[in-house]
Length: 64
Image (cartoon, rainbow, N blue to C red; front, side, top):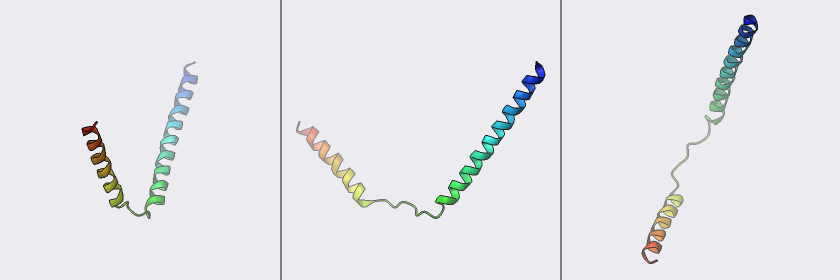
């Protein structure tokens, strides 16, 4: 009975190790894939839109 538990424990440890190795491999591949993408620039249109929404909601709450 103990030998079966030891075999299952060994298999479980191997599977955990393989999962960790595959996760690291996927992380490296994804890092290489996105390496060449340009960094996002702040968008002035989004900023103006957010400011307008805040101002308009403040004014509408003030007069309601």
